[in-house]
Length: 87
Image (cartoon, rainbow, N blue to C red; front, side, top):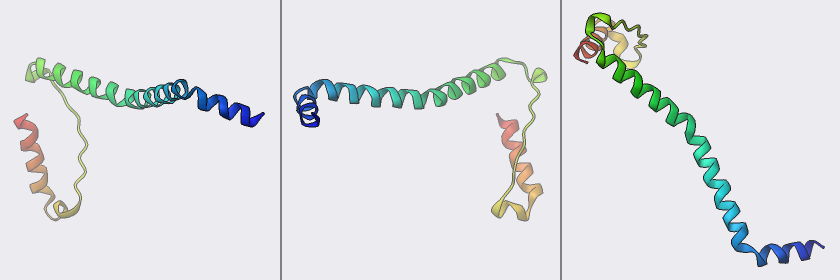
């Protein structure tokens, strides 16, 4: 009985290959959906912030300084502040 099932699968290899490719493509698309939605949300937020006048925009950010930057935190903060104001 197992041999008959195996022979039948081998005879219909095109249908089996189509199913395998379909499952792989569905898995890839499903795995990328959260990345796509996050990217669209970020683009929408950036566009909305750029459309607003500067006096209506209030951003709260949290910055972590690590590594070589820890020796002079004030200089690192000034650099980050200048980068933010340049945007």
